[in-house]
Length: 574
Image (cartoon, rainbow, N blue to C red; front, side, top):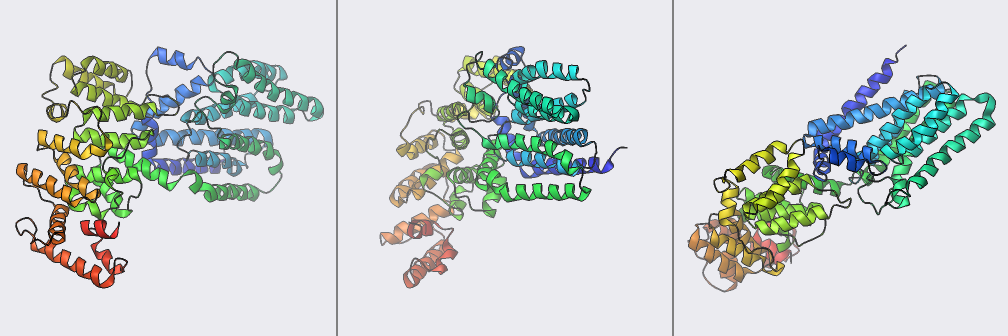
C-alpha cells in the first residue's frame, strides 16, 4: 500500500526548496551559471570522459547552464533533492522492511541542502551523490548473490570512473545490504562487506596511476569542490549522514513512528544551528550585488542599498555604478557609505566577483580595453580553471568594439556551442559580417567615445583618465559624474573646483554635492558663496551644519541630520 504521507512530505519539501532558490537565492544560481561554459560538442563530452568523475561534472554543468533562468534552476535543484530523498527513503525501506521511516530519511537531504550554502560546492557533487543513491537502490533490488557479486566487481569501477569517489558511498551502502541480507552468515557477510569497501578504495588508487590528478584530489572528487587545494570535510560528513541513516534504520524501525518524526526535528535543529556558517550573509550580499550588476538592474541595486548600507568595497562600487547609470551619483552619493575614491573604481584584485563589478564599471564608462583586461583576469582567477560564459561574452564585445574581429569571432564561435547564448552569438557575428557595428546603438557609441590608449594607466591617475573620457565625449554622463565625485571622495576640494569648471564649460551640470563643495570652498577661503551656482537652500543648510558643529562638536548626534552631505563626509567622517 502506497504511503501517501511520504509523498506529501516529499512534495512539500520540493516546493520549499523551489521557493528557497527561486525567490531567496536566485543570485547564487546566476553565480554558478556564470562560472562555467558548457559546450554542446562531442569534444567537450570526450574531454570529460578522460578523468574519474567526468560524467558527474558533465551532467552537473549541463544542468547548471539552465540556471540562466532562475525558475528552471530552482526547479532542477528541487527535483534533484526530491529524488535524493526518495532514494534514501527507498534504501531505508529495503533495510528496515517498513515504510514508516520516511521522516528520518529526509535528514541527510537537509544536510545536503545546508552544505549547498557553500558557493564553492559544485553541482557535480550533488549529481554524484544522487547517482550513488540511485545505484544503491538498484543494487538493493538484486536478490541473488551472483548478481550482487557482479554488481560489486563491475559496477564499482565503472561507477568510480563515471561519477567519482562517491563510489565509496555506494560501496558502504552495498556493504550494509550484504551484511543485513545474510543474518545466518554474519562473519562471512562482515568479511565481504569489508572487502567491498576496500575494493572501492583500491580502484581509486589504481586509477590514480592513469591520470595526472593528485591522489588526495581523487578522494575528494575532481570538480566536486571549486577550490582544488581545499579538502572540504563537510563533503564527507554529508556522505556519512546518508550511510548512517540507512545503517540505523534497522534499529529505528523497532521504535514508534513518532521517533522518526522526532529525529527529523533533530536534523532540522542541526541545520538551523549551523545555517549562518554556510549561508554567510556577507557572501550572499556580494553575490546579490554582482547579479544585479550583471543584469543591469540599477534601480534594484539602489533600493537594496537603501534598505541596508553597503559597507564592502564591491557593494559600494556597485551602488555608485547604479547611481551613476541612473544619473543620481552627484546628488545622492553621500546618502550611502563611501570608502574613498576606491568606491568608484576599486583597485585590481585577483578575485572573480569583485573584478567583474569593477570591469563592468570600466565598460560602462567606455574604458573598453581596461574592462577587457579585468574580465579576462577575472576569468583566469576562477579556482577550478573553468571558462566563464559571462566573461567570454564581454570579451567578444570588447574585441568587436576595438575592431579586433578575428579575436571576437573566436569568442563568438565558443558561444555558438552553448545552449542559451548561441542565438546572441550568431546575431553578433552577423553584425561583423554586415559591417554594421558602427550602427549598433551600444557598440557604435562606445567605439566612437572610448579611449584607444587605455590599456595601462596608474591607479593614482584614474581621475585624469575620466577627464579624457569626458573631454572626448561630453555626452558621457557616467564619466562626467565619476569625474566630479572622484575628488570629493579624495577629500580634495581644490581639485573638485578645477574639474567642476571644466565640466561647466561643456555641459550645464551642477549636482547637489557639487553645489555643497562650491559652498564649502567659498567659506573656507573667506569668499562669497556664488548665488548663480549655489541655491539659497544649500547655503542655509551649510550654515546650520557649521553652527551645529561649532556649538556641539564633531561627535554630536545632532550632526546625523547632515549625514547625507559632502560636508559630513569631509569634516566628520575623517
